[in-house]
Image 1 (cartoon, rainbow, N blue to C red):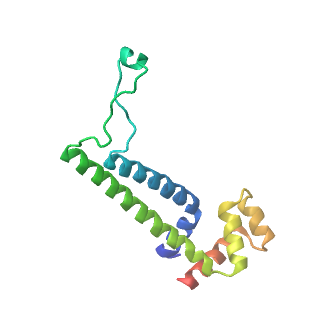
Image 2: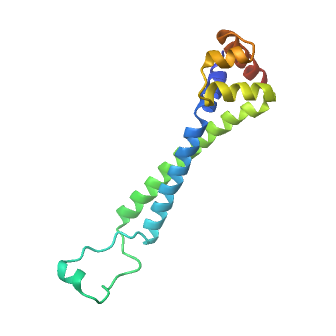
Image 3: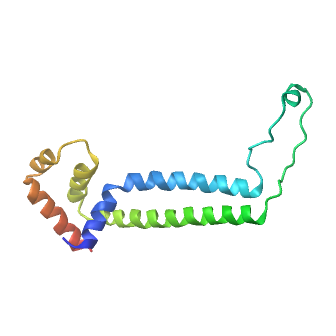
Length: 144
């Protein structure tokens, strides 16, 4: 089995985790963007007297940030975008499985994303456990 075959299989095995991570990182980037635009709702700490007052507290719509704060936010956003790019590449590698025959795609789905034991899946498809893995590896090597 080549390293590229192993990479495709590992990417396929973890593709749902990668997608969840991408979604989480996208939300974090949105929060950073809001903070950069001054829309973060962190609010000003109020004293007890101010909290009891029925009148609204004055607020600013665009707080002034220092340059170091802006640069820090840009750096955080850039790092999260790099992470998204790496995860997207892994998802593209996992999508190579779509080139397999429908039967082999079903086999991969059952092996790596079902609750069934590997032995049961292999037996249902007419393979031994070792034979099934050899078949999967051979089929992936063909599409690479």
